[in-house]
Image 1 (cartoon, rainbow, N blue to C red):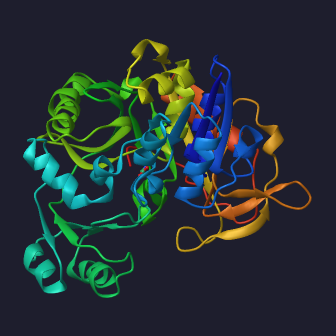
Image 2: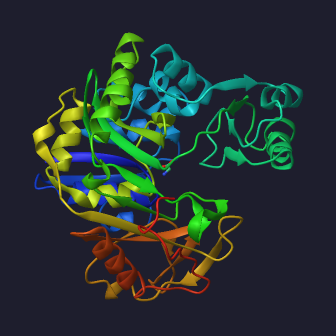
Length: 417
Ligand code: GLY
């Protein structure tokens, strides 16, 4: 029996908890902070911050802690560092390695040091230096050098939009203190690559693509992700080998060389340019909503796989990836992404017959019904032997569930952005 605590509360963590619960090895799952939907599979934790969470882990004789989201990895002394101190294996890297996600400048310096293909960049502290680094070249990519819940990046097509973002980051300090990175704009389809990294070893998982904007055909503002698609077939031709050789292997070797310990999922946000794959960003956890598409493709013993990895052994044979396609379709509440709407009752949750549903922003009301409680409300995920079959199935299943003000894209899985 594996006693495991999953940190996080969103759709990704609902998917991780589900994959752990479905593992053939018996599990006793806890989640912090969790959600009402997660608590159908996991027990709640009496904690309110990193210190109380660590105390709970220590007193509870846990076998494993899984970092679903990144925030606690870079809070205080770091979730994984604290787990190491109390002797609980953690799937998620220590504070020093999680800088790959927390600091965009740290990540860029790492990529350059280890000759990992990426776009050119400059890091600046003030608005004048930002303007000088942009030097009138548009489009340009501006990134806040810190955690900003997916909102710290702007692709600016012109001076007006660049000025607006520079003002938000460096004048209003909307995301707090931090530098601004001016990055070369790269063009091409994006792909999300995930690897399980255990010290110097790695296993590349099924690739995915997320859909970042609120409206069809890449329209409207960025969101936390309106859907995702995953299939081994996305590794067309020699793409897998090229990505492994130019990006994944040098990254893992670079971590070793720099003395940065790593056990956990490592997410490579890539862009497939005419000059080959280049890395846009690292994240030190699974993607959201990519996890909701990828994890249902896994067969085997996910719980034992993660436990072995956290203890320092990469047991590749414990998991396999299904053939075919998985499509994840997010439904968001009214007003998202500028705002969100709570309290809209969700109907049809019991009607799903051929798909999974992972809750992100829901809660149970006093009558016991689920209602909206956030921007992205839930993701319906369906599999199919072809991309088209998975797309048709996910829309047919998602049509069964609804709430007032629901927003959904109609092209998830059918295009590349
Ligand atoms: N899918 C984007 C992210 O997880 O950051």
